[in-house]
Image 1: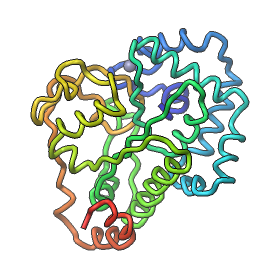
Image 2: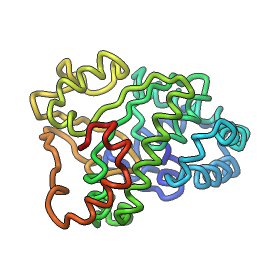
Image 3: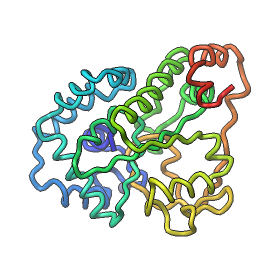
Amino acid sequence: MGGIWTQGLIEDRLCSCGTRFSCCPFWQAVGSTSFSSLGTHDIEAIVRYVRSVFPARKMWRLLSCRTRRKLVSSAPANFLDITARLYQGMRTVSTRQVVVDSSKLATYFVLLAHVSVVDVHVIHLVRDPRAVAHSWRRPRVADPDGRSTMPRFGAIKSAVLWLIMNVAVEWAARRLDLPYVRVRYEDLVEDPARIVGGLRSGVLGDAGPDAGEAGGLVEENVDLGVVHSISGNPMRFRQGRTSIVGDADWKVGPRGRRVIVAAITLPLRWRYGYR
Ligand SMILES: [Zn+2]
């Protein structure tokens, strides 16, 4: 939900339910439940703030206690209160106790950890950096309307971002003493029922589809319901019966790029079991 202010309110992107953010019944209901008095000046101040602190290249700032405090203290005066009302609205409208927020930035959960009504649990989904670099290099349209594209990075920038973003998540979760679990993408696609079942018995609780103990999972297939994600990978628009299949395209093609990424990410890559 880190993108609700820019991709949602400002850019009015497609929600993954298929309608524009401004027309999505779920977000309309959340808005009317949470924000009867939210003014234009409130939104503009928050948008300025999130655009200044959310870029992935700035995640290194979370490694210092002083800059973490500054991140929170520099937020607009009512930002934490507005965020609290936003999450309470999502819980009320969805009638769920758990909100699965697919935001990838450690900055965002550091801010959420300061919101009194939100109990943050961090699920850290990691993937082999060579696969991530391959994915970040491919030209892809983000939304079916063609209005936005996924960002593209070269090998060196991909490797550095992978390091910064993953170190920041681990470090910030530990420093804030938040419940934390790390999941490897490769393990998830190999045995999704086991991984999701473990998460549901732990941090996810009642989140996810009701069918089946592992969240609608039957072997490698999942029944995807309607969700209301505002930005991210284009696969967020998929609904219905979907096969979970690992993407191994990165293992073919020029070797040079994989070698560069592997060298830059070596210590953390080995720690995550990617040899
Ligand atoms: Zn929607």
